[in-house]
Length: 348
Image 1 (cartoon, one colour):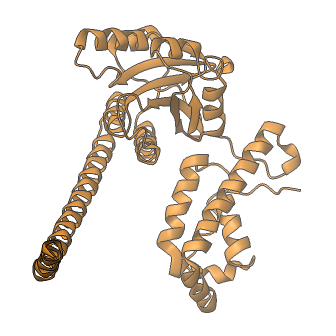
Image 2: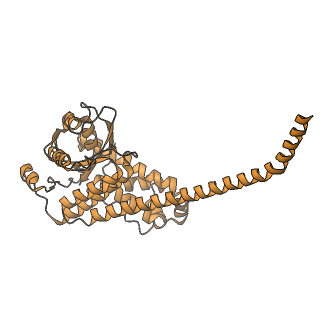
Image 3: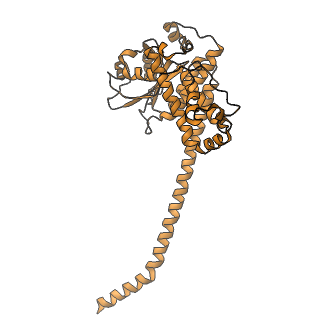
């Protein structure tokens, strides 16, 4: 009887107190969740803002660098924010020679950092014996490689104490279609690893800065010993590409492959326009003024194409614009379209 009465009292108290406390618990949980979401969103905004500011600062420093040496130093400093360790090698013939490093040691040991920087400045890598570097130089595209001595470089693997499973990133630097340097980056010591899109953007900015300086100042070849002694970065002589022949049959096998790569790259650029600017393309064709509708986008893509293949190279971007967007009717591009900026090679 007493037990039955106790159960009734317990049930009565539960009915009286549990619902309000349950509501209160739910309200508190909802409030905490909203505050956490707001804090997370604010943190994400702060991170994005900080990252954008950092990238913008790096771009400005590279563009305003007064010499080739300053461009290289600004590039390494800016890129260090998007990887663990970063360094630059200068490309001359079949050799890559170490120049400077940034962040190769992050434990505060300045003596070790200086020793490693000196070792890097004296390192030499044969391109023909390093497939990963050879691929980056040949393709002029970013290469991701495992740290294998027979694929990357035995000298670099040993110097940087790399393990086989570590990924390294190689970013080529080009001037007038010639790779003049390679930026090495890995994710040692940082949780985020290598943020390759940011470093690729910084390298593209550095290429533009190098092009601007080389067009103003004659580039002369210097001895490697004097460069190392002065800590200066000098570019090898970069000769402009000769005008292409008018006949595909006059090209060598290597030249044909280069033209094919340019054609593929132009198709990718125009395909992006098709994907993201479909409405403007339709309006431009109807108005017979594609260039008028897409001038900014076309010029940005054209600049990317010429930065990669050089202003003296065949304008396959123009060819692809006409073929894909204008159905081979140049009149559809509109009266202000400048046309091809260089002569074209006719493929069979």
